[in-house]
Length: 362
Image 1 (cartoon, rainbow, N blue to C red):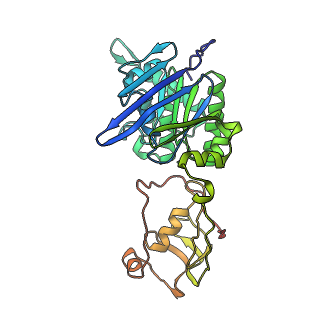
Image 2: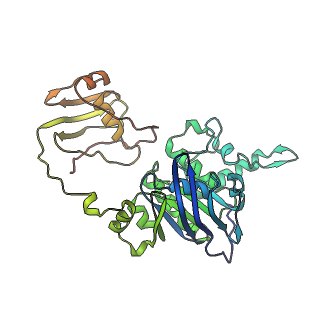
């Protein structure tokens, strides 16, 4: 991995002062300050709409700020573009990937920075560099495979590899583990530790407290486009962060709600799907309560619910709705029975780890 190491890095590496950004009818950022030091992981924390995405788009050159100053290293930055950001060492990994589906992983990695000699592409050298980078990252990724043939998790790996190809001084990661398995997440954390040891600064956007506790040096809380507070991660509590994020006490956010579970509305016995993603699962859900279905990416939880609704075919097992057997479910029949299913936008099937049993925890 071609990461240049500055033996005496400037501190802070990134310094933003009074950054504001307006869109039509909306003030997305309101005089926001942010410092990121070389060799630290700085978490941006806030609710949806707090301004996190707008801020990292300003840092990466996608949006120009309307007000404020931007220093990177020893230089004051003006008129930043995504291309110049990468040139000076700012590499973003957004939730919305910047990959070209019809190109291979290798072609995406070198898009816009192809290796040439006398106007001729040096394909062998690019392939060698792509393979070496992917091997160093520990990703299970084939450089010759097309992006549109990859699962969401493998596309995420390709996006991270693309960001790390070349000179990196500041890496921006926007919810990077959303599509990764626990094993792949572990590899990403190892990579982050290695980058920090090389004095690379990181901006990390996440809502997951476990990740913040494992990775963060400092946390900046945004709310309604404003900088609320920057804290040392080690000296802050989860409750404190949530209260700063929302502006409300945590006991008001999560009040005790008394409930009285009623009859069983959904009863599943030994449900197995035709594709093997779900095997012999048992669970039930009562009226008047919420039943959660949890698991890692690709473990079969979505397929399980889709089968109950009638989108995925079941090979065996029994489904009962309100005490009555529900054979050969279809979406049309489910709607007639009063069952609603909200499909996640952009749902893609990735690698699967079959579900073999389930217990209900409340």
